[in-house]
Length: 252
Image (cartoon, rainbow, N blue to C red; front, side, top):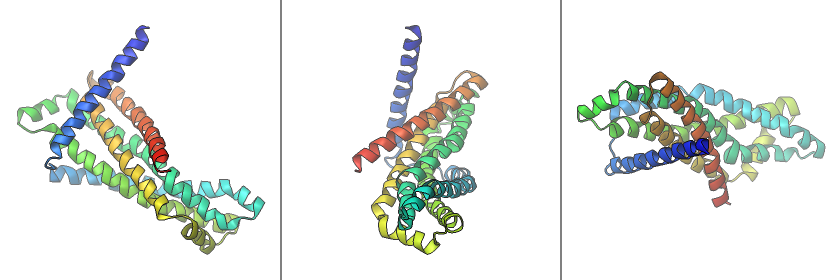
């Protein structure tokens, strides 16, 4: 019973601090307040440095999906549906979720570690002592860049996955790139593409808020930073799947 109470209090505390952070975010968006140098630094750290791993992950994901579906395509001779199957699943589900999980593990964890280290070394309090709002200076640039870069990386990842799938279908299954592309263009609609982008924005915002909240509420020195990073990654992963379910349910 004591363990359940401890978990309940921890979850309640996390929800409460996140609600307060959301109120602070709303306050800082009216009007929008972004620190230019901090925003550009986060753009490079979040977007540019994530680009290589997104490209590799997306290309292999597209190839694996084609290989997995290839046996059924060959069994029924439905080669014209190969591109549709890959494009539909990549645009709506696999692309946003795979990139979101990678994003939470790489960017979200780094974000929490950086803010958590600043918190336990009293750098956050030092900013307040200098009359600098840490939400406006540190949090808002991170939220903005994580939403924008998640959106852009999902677009890049979607098309890289299709390229990887098309190349795999050509050389392993004998399905021409032209037929693969025709299948995507003919059967996959823009609503499928935009469905994934809605998820990208939602995932980016959730990862940003959860990672910033975990970092700003870190305590207990180096051990506390590690615990905050773990909570951030786990919380972000749960949020990704919950949001994926809700958006899929509402958009059907």
